[in-house]
Length: 113
Image 1: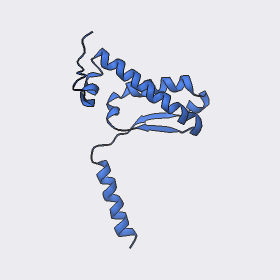
Image 2: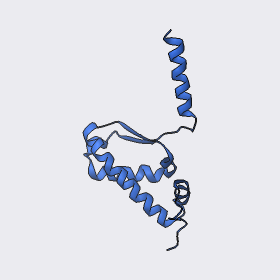
Image 3: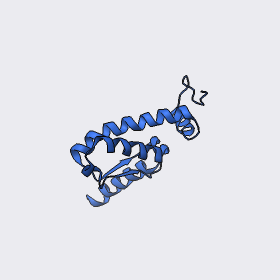
């Protein structure tokens, strides 16, 4: 099986670009989602959150991430803990952190005087 992934010069961006067309990349992505789901199983069982929001580069996995994690949670958690649990992808851009910091400083300067 030939893969577009180059293990000697691996990059997250290349991996994420290959996931939808490369079988080896998809296998790695499925295992990654399984591992994330297993890690979150304890969190869901103990804390019973109503929502988990995924952020960062892995959001490019989109439905692969959400479906894979949900499947593992369904196998490892009580049904009641999953009944109202929402899994979502953060929809932010590269400037959101800077915007948040600027708004925080604005509030600190204007509202705390």
